Amino acid sequence: MSGAPATVLRTVLRHGPVARSTIARLTGLSPAGVSRHCAGLADRGLVVETDGPVSRNGMGRPHVPVDIDTARHTVCGVHIAHAQCTLSLLDLRGNILARQEIPHEDLTPATVLRTVVDAVPAFLGGRRPLVIGVAAGGWVDTDNGVIVEHASLGWRNVPVREILARATGLPVHADSHARALVRAEQLFGEVRASESVLHLFVGNVVDAAIVTGGETHRGPRSAAGDVAHLPVGDPGIRCGRGHVGCFEATVSDEAWARRTAGVSMRELLAGQADPFLERARTVGRAAALLYDVVNPEVLVVTEASVIHYPECLRALREEIAERSHLCAAPEHTVLPSSFDGDSVLAVAGGAVALGVLYADPLSHAVG
Image (cartoon, rainbow, N blue to C red; front, top):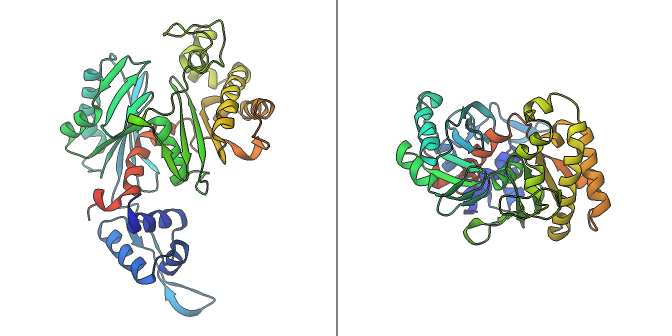
């Protein structure tokens, strides 16, 4: 994280509208320093004074609170999934202002990214976001902005940051959607006070993200979080690498749809929880294993049925309680995503951009 301005901005995000004196108390920064940083952030359109001064019990000098400025700036998100890309426009509090799904005509990187580039101007409608964030499943090298491997798309070493930055003229950052969504949870979700978080994402791609000490663990070339081949799945299923019983090959959206005579996930989710209970329990087996390895304060599971059906969340927690040695109270420490199934992909792309902005606001904001 980048210094006092970022600390002040994140404090305003979490507590705003908030008085400068309260920011100083919460952060340990001097009142003069807080005022200076708030002024700089306001000049860049990141914070704004709210209407009307307030005082405590009518006594003392009135304080004019500051809050995140949601009117001046936006960020753009691009989520690259197996069947489509999702464009999103978010304000600085992570609220989705607009989103658009773009189905893939074919799966080649050049075609998919060209379609995105062609759609962006009309989607933005003349607005110029501060940053574009790209989220995708699989292995994403954050430092170099490269999708190293996206197995379901068959992509290898695709320089998405370079391609989109050159085409749009905007700063672009890329990350895995598991890490993007855990950053969204830290910024806007239910785990903002947690220093250690394990996030498990289950969709067409299955992966994980680990936060310790408030920071996301990435590993060399940001390869951490690959859980696709954990041997917790159906031993009768063979993955694309020839292994049996792999987690992703058992529970991915595509694999689960094949079990139900080709009924789509969207159609399944419009029905009952029953087709998903076994999936939730399989996810629970993997989650229990990962929980005991990481021992987080909170485990967040982003999986459609767990978000959608209380029965599936209950089945997930029961499986974790049975198999984990460390998770004594899953009803409190195992949570579904803070974002509903319709918004989660839109949030992921935007969260990459917002994570960068809140980590280093002075490098990306303009007045």
